[in-house]
Length: 176
Image (cartoon, rainbow, N blue to C red; front, side, top):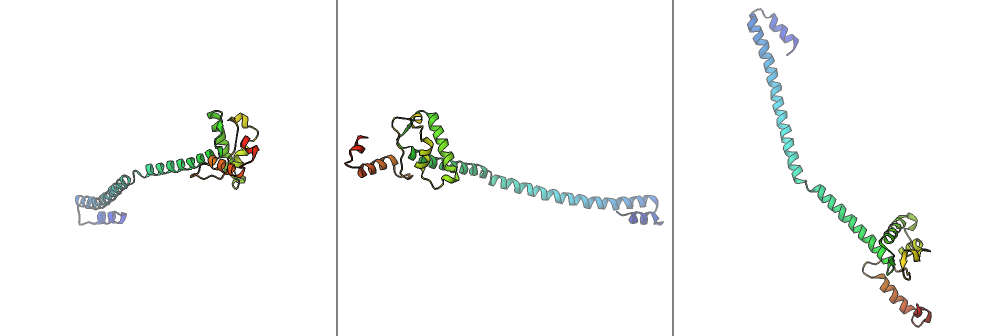
């Protein structure tokens, strides 16, 4: 309703006061009815969007759990691969206790993560970690497996067989 519309009704001398008020109220009622119709239309749209959202939420409710499970499995796989590498280089050496083993694992993890060690064999990296501390870290005689990591082969057995063949007949090798 505009000002000009109201003035036109008020200036209309053919209508009495009640008819003028009724005409203004009817004009205002039509505007309100139009706004109410638009509100109902928008409420219907909102309701439809809420329904769509609920359906999508139900459809993908397991998505976060699946992603979390996938991340956990990937982390476990990476940790298993690392443990295989560490066990391969550790060989038959027995750390004195679990704290020593954990310390060696953490030191090995830190060293293989360094960029300058990317091309070095695991045995060399492990040797630099334990060098000079063998008696502190391990029980008995210490050997470092120099074979590359291969998850299908037990490195100490393969190394021993190779060395036995290589040094067959050597009296110094047979004494050790």
